[in-house]
Length: 190
Image (cartoon, rainbow, N blue to C red; front, side, top):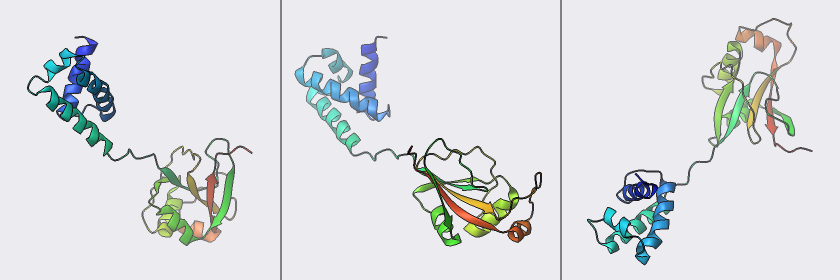
């Protein structure tokens, strides 16, 4: 099968509504619309032998118009992370760390413009964050990467615990105390 034949098949599928990939179909439809209007390519007419040339042109134009009405693809959203430490996980950039109240942290966590990602590596911390955020926060030991534009809500304990100590109870964390911080990376190099 020749490349030209494959292109005819793709165009025919796009015109009759078979999903082919709207960008490919649109590009091909625009390219061949000119050829049909000029009467240059008789082979294409054979693909649409059930319709007149004028009906084929109308179908292709309607397809192009429908594609122009499509919703634009969603841009990748920035993320809001939950971290159990203040840590720089992204690449180089200018990071800013600022204190947060519980209310501000909840508002930030529930912002619909951001994708929520828990990167809490300890169950006791996940339990505390669940209470603070008002929803179940899973323990999720992942290697998170904070890209420019992403935000992290960080929980920082008030004291450094001894090496090897793992806090397993919410009460232990409450007794030690903690602060919440907002960590941003604007990606700029100063």
